[in-house]
Image (tube, rainbow, N blue to C red; front, side, top):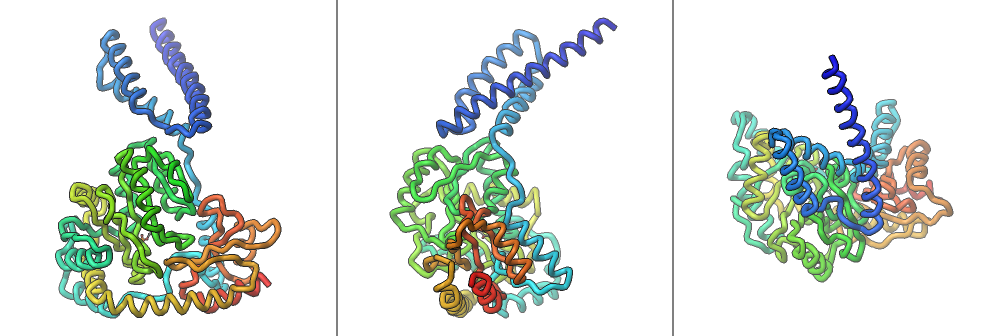
Length: 439
Ligand code: PMP
């Protein structure tokens, strides 16, 4: 019984020490934040582990168990320093908009990244044909030849690079590809570099993988030491296309710490200005593509990744152990869409331009201040009203006019902005209502 009592005491002592350790972690975290130092310092960790290992040998302990306890301590230190982010302000508006629709109210969706157009007819025909042919079974995680060939031809032309079908893999949407890549390329506590304003999807991914987020708007110095840097050009939400010299600056920052650059090319086909593909100027760049935007295939859930062969191979393995494969009939549909891509895109770009003109004409001379986006589906105007609060405004706009927009705070420190999907299927009705609300 005495022994049992002693075990209890020792166990409580361990937790007392754990508490002390966490208090120390919090104070060092404050210093790191002030000095802009990364959460993880692998050299410090390695030397601490060496000391722990020696101690474990002295105590005659099982090394595997010591390793597990050590990993737990390190991971709780990281968790204390990398805050979890919530669902985000844009999700609140989206959910409320959906709830209002269920109540029978008319809602104009200018808050989501869903374009007015759908896929080309050929995609739907290919989908039905494929299903009728019985292509409804499991398939290889590396993808089908038709899709891979069409996609590699498409990006080779678009980006002026030579992409072979073996360096490309289809994914169930590009968001999943971003998640998969981030989890493959980083360890908990690593730094991920983002450019502001930022699509909130990256924050959600970073938060669920326990990554430290650093961000920069113009000066990319703050991104040094990132394991992965994400670039989106044209960007969501502000439509900015980074110039070649800005990208070269970024590449210099990335190469210094051997970082990967993940190029989110969701809007690559929707640029009004010349755009430099990062994959053209950096070896460790990975291009993540979506069929959702230019091809209007949001609900099909298909995207694709091209980049260094070893990364693409690991991604195919990641798919094999998670979703198995992108459904073959979906790949057939997307392959058919890409095969008629030039013709489809010419129509889409015309629609995009006229919707942008409509938005510009309606919203000029209002309280919205914005410049023409370089590309993409959105305007990200500043609202020139005293004490403007983006979330409050978005909530009220939705309740009073049934118009849903995304509040600026969802994309970083932009409480004076809103994001408006001018190319939404509700653009022609919703934008005049937005104008009325600002009158
Ligand atoms: N990246 C960006 C910048 C986006 O805006 C979106 C969708 N809003 C995605 C990725 C994800 O697109 P999907 O998963 O439909 O391919």
